[in-house]
Length: 108
Length: 123
Image 1 (cartoon, rainbow over the protein chains, first blue to last red):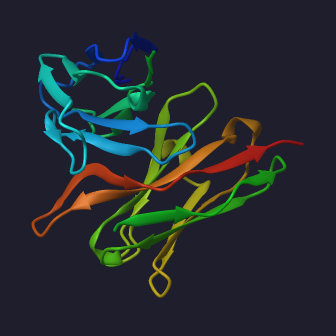
Image 2 (image 1 turned 90 degrees about the vertical axis):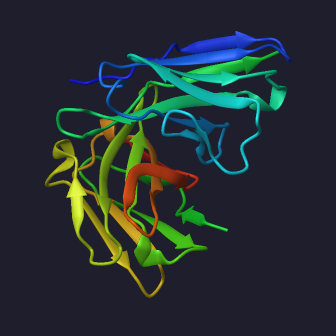
């Protein structure tokens, strides 16, 4: 079955650049989307269609996609960016909705 | 502003059913599909199905066919997800999420989520 693969954790110091990847064979044909979920809160859309920043999302967040890898980049990560981040896309064969396993970002 | 407010945590025994609600506000209720997504402990997010609030049409993930039912009440702008035959593996946080739709079409991704409802299945 189709899968989206993310690293379980990423750790950076405040002010550094954090990069979270999402790998999937279908990503050359299907958009990737990124969500942020802080502890106990509703998930928030961060990036849509590979690289469109959702309204209200700080400019330090950006998205890109190349080949089978989509990347969420946080330039100058802040302590308040600590959260779980997960990617989402569609299966090219049957259009099933698929999520990545999630990446826990630590900023300290 | 768009809000999806879900019902509270539930504890159920194996074999029982659970019904989770999701009240939508801040936008025309019938204009956007509502999806249900769950996350079991230590697992990734899993799409369960969706409902079109305009006509009540549903589309369920095959894994949940026969066990899940999604309905809506347009008078209260609320969507419901009922899962029957509960087993311990159904212990999870259940989220509702709105699909982004504009004047031309719906775009297959979720722009707003509810806060989640923890359902614990335990004897």
